Amino acid sequence: MPNILLGVSGSIAAYRACDIARELMRAGHTVRVAMTRAATRLVSPDTFAALTGNPVAIDVFDEPESGQIAHIRWAQDADLVLIAPATAHTIARLAFGLADDMLTTIALATRAPMLIAPAMNPAMWTHPATQAHVQTLQARGVEFISPAYGVMACGDEGWGKIADTATIVQAVARRLLSARDLEGVRVLVTAGPTYEPIDPVRFIGNRSSGKMGYAVAEAAIAHGAQVTLITGPTMLTPPAQAQVIRVQTALQMYEAVQNEFAQCDAFIATAAVADYRPERTLPKKRKRDTQSWTLNLVPNPDILGEVAQRKEHRIVIGFAAETDKAIIRAKNKLLRKNLDLIAVNDVMEPDSGFEVDTNRLSFIFANGRVENLPLMSKRECAERLIQALAAMMERKVRHTNSQE
Image (cartoon, rainbow, N blue to C red; front, side):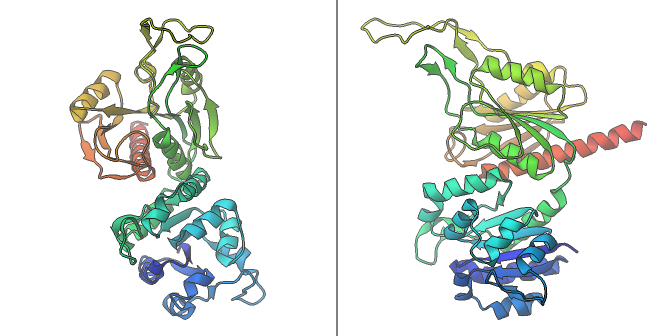
């Protein structure tokens, strides 16, 4: 029976944690609750004690069970830590590694997987500081259950409502089941753009932020995989558990993939590799003048297409960013490049594609099946992709065993 540590912070949505605790217990989990001081002003600790049958901890010096150091014992006993709701303040404290109450002390002491369900005003959720803290925690393997869109208690409308209870309970079940389903699997991920130099100052690039690829790496790590991340230039912090190889150009990424491909079990190519590079790079910056300037471009290697032709036992997954006829073009790319799966999105659609935190993907499998995902965070898209990878790996193992 898995032990869930439910953290409750001081959002107006704290009352929802009562339903979450009850549903987790109905699913067969043991639930312990740690509350922030602010949360106790919204829901009584006695309510959670009555619901769960376990004492509630608030202060770092609380010892609900005599003779036990609660923040260590509870941290060690937890199979998963769920913080729902999580305020902007609690997320910031977690990102900075503060341990000034029972909840944050447990979070710092535990080695269990962690899920966070934010709940706050839309302006607070989208604030750069909050998003930076979210990225910090995601880089450490923390999974966020994206807030929903709706009208807040204050009357504002936007993204910030805590996810519905069913979504949160499903996320807990998925995380518990998936925690080790890629254990021992070596996953190679490419991410970000490539920069093709024109001169020491200028380059040809694209709008890729690397967020999708980094999210894929984080999700794979959360499933137990050994991840090598080959990344073009980004402003992101890579997952701490990943082996990171930094490159600038398509040729450098090509060389890195060639060096690492033989050691991987799965290759996921999310990088937006430049199709062309300048034929000649100028040794010094070209000064502005009144004359026109023509650049001669030559094609870069097709990294994904080349390695997929010699994939052997490996699973190879590609991405396609399209501006029209997305599904048709992606199907052609999947067949042409011998892929097992391709994830495609239309970058002309709102909130889908480059430089945003959300995406709307369609998965096209080698057998022709198409799975259309709704608009969701890139982290959730990555989770769905890694679930698909895990299922393909399992089928491959079963097929291999059946032939022995």
